[in-house]
Image (cartoon, rainbow, N blue to C red; front, side, top):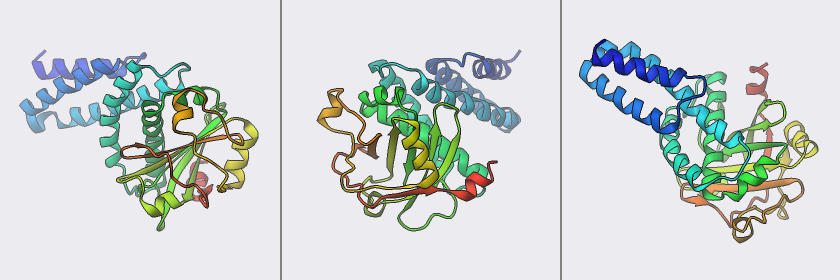
Length: 261
């Protein structure tokens, strides 16, 4: 077997492993594959295209497996998460302005995974709240959905008990002000079924009394739910501590949800 085929076989073997290759092995395999591609050019384009799709599925699975595994978000988790985010953020850039409902759902799912990893890297105590959450929702200011108007964002709410995804839209002050720089995200954790189901089925409008769970208390692991919810806001440079949620509105995206049935 020549060098190119050997490298491709090794890379595919790592990707298709039932246990998912660990992050360091995936990065090494991807690097070796890049060398093989540069040596052979168009001859292996189809092989590379196939590998790219399968490798991203495996890389994406690392994020989901990591945050769905209960336990403290450690220094090792943070270090691995930083490397993972570099790859995932590049993939997200390719998903902007989707053309179909299927593309929009994939973009929003990927965005949500990156937001959770970014949150836990910035605020490890949030992982402890997440472990006990009935569900969560993540929103983003970038155009990862269809038919977004000025000052609107999009996101997805996930029931952690049955895995159901409900796609949603939001209008908010943070989106209007552009306080997050390149992007602005919200992560909402729900303590129980009642609060989560009401948010998904009826929508929600934030009041001035609804604070953001961030800052000194959260850093000292005393973060808690406020009215059954914990809300974090994230910008390009990290957590946003003083952003105002008042007036933010959230509702289900019927177009994406109906086409997903």
